[in-house]
Length: 450
Image 1 (cartoon, rainbow, N blue to C red):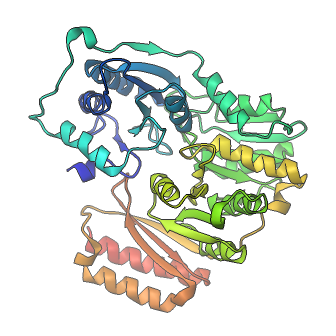
Image 2 (image 1 turned 90 degrees about the vertical axis):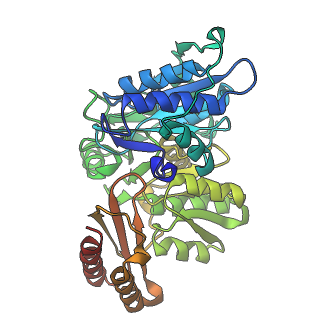
Image 3 (image 1 turned 180 degrees about the vertical axis):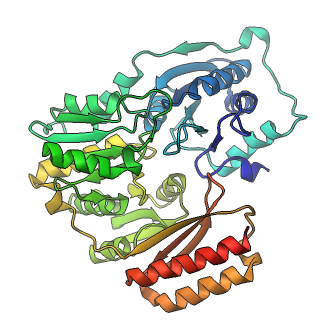
């Protein structure tokens, strides 16, 4: 059960439906507190959340559990996921907690953890916590009454994060004269992201900065980059930035309204880092979802692309194992490991703006580095998450499609780590054929896994 409890990015689900209930959150707080309680004194945990209505409920339950376990809780209020990673390190806390379902609708929520170094927990650690939560016979080793934790709020968390992100932008440069549209998805970065850009001198046009508890990711943010694109053209901005609900991913729009995904952004940043001699072994880490064009581009640059499973946590793990300093996902998670321990949409935006400032070129002239292979993504709702090899018809269909695509195409079939979906990705040179192959495979998957 532990393997199914945490997904690729923590615990996630519909609020008031297991496992996203107050009682589970309480047990999760106790379990995490016990697991990360070290020594006799000074156990600290930083808790942040996005702007979902359910954040209040889950924050209270988690705080109660953590305090019961003897942890002192520091609450930041709405704050980006990467800000909690930073604050956990900066405040020398034992644990960081983020309450967010990222890009999901408001009625979902999630809980994810960072260790004292600001990294997401590895599977083995998550499974230890899950075992304690899911076992109804768990006996909690509560501390003595005098050792119960306290809960306090920190008022300057946003300011600390803004100072940190600005420090990642060269001190001799400013954003003076740049017109920037930013869409914060009515999420966690609705205050800090525009302020950071304005403090660096930019003229900022704000979208998605009026959260009401239920409008997070609602036709705004990184899932709807056309909203930013339209605003960029309307106000004749130099660049558009679209964040998701917890601000750990970024989609960019150039001055003409052209949308750039994570692969195109990675190509731009990797090229700049190679030129500056800042990319060890010219190695870029990305997932199996990244376009084949990115792999070819890195080879042409004298580098290589290392692929991982889907999930920014797996990208970070591979980066640490291979001493890589840059990696990310097609979806817009971008990790600059010399600056941060996790994906950070605002920090990534500043790296792109740095390139624009250093070259004094518009984004449209800088970003046309990839000729993307057509990709077709299809999500199939499944009732049974059976191993694909147990359904020969699926394997036969995949093999047939891969043979037709040859070496200039790929078939990827995987289960979502956060939703009851089977995700299908077909990539090849012929867009019409790719779409048909994806539809064919989706029909087989739906039939075999219903």
